[in-house]
Length: 259
Length: 113
Image (cartoon, rainbow over all chains, first blue to last red; front, side):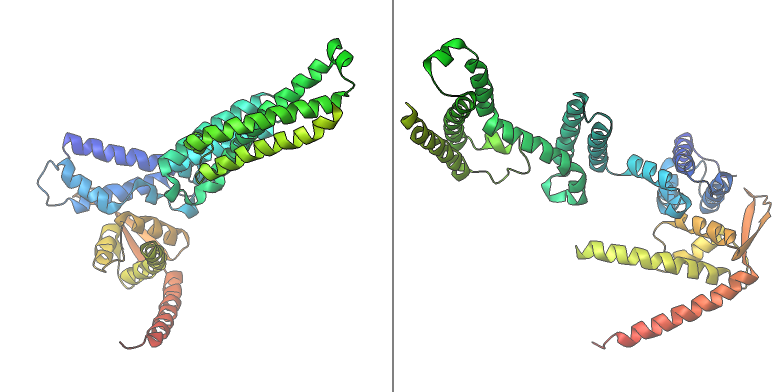
């Protein structure tokens, strides 16, 4: 029997441990047979080598044998084993993509009508951003299909909140205010009209402020809405500002005859 | 891009060729795993990881194309010898014929430079 040094023995044990981990997911392969094949191969390969065999020599033999994973070919695995091994051995960025998509899926399947869904979406969003940072835009490849659903949902929600949030809040506030008696006393406008006017006024003002702010710092929108707003620039910011001005002009044209 | 294409293509090619080469290596003789690996090692670019040979041998045994006998060895672990079964001999003839046709046809498509 070939005698291994202590570090070489540890290296071999580690290799065999990894092989056993993969073998666990195969029903068709004989674990003992695989280990015997490895042992016999190493024994023959190291015949005539000065003993105890050093770890560097053994590492060379193991490198030629190949990764522990290849001892369990894909056809010897069930679908579940393939999935587990893929998750365990794929590069870190792919694992993040799987986790991100799984969080989104579980959130929608189990908590569709519950506030818990927001927690799952938030967790999925953070994981997606981490995967995006790890892989880089150039190397995303098919990961896009796993990462973009969450990013798109959050980006659309953020964009909607950014553009329409203040207007929506103003509309709600307008509806509440209408309940106040003094409004009713001083105006013959109905609730719907007041809500629309409040929302349009605040939205117009907000878009003007937002447009001017983003014109100065367009990166403020590029960062949170990556990768969908990567091309956002000052011209887009000016368009938002222009839309705000247009809202106010339309509002003025509508409101003037009423008063 | 072309490197990745070539890598995928050569991997697929090697997978198919390894089975043929293993069966040819043990045709008319009996070899144990390490000797088969050593013979295949001589064919440039065929065996990237030597460990891939053993799962193929196990599969060929399960399919009934090869038979194994185990002999104790004074020098180390027991040695498992592989020989071609009757069924294996039959499939090997067909595989060699098929490969010869493909190779002849593929060579015929190549234009002289």
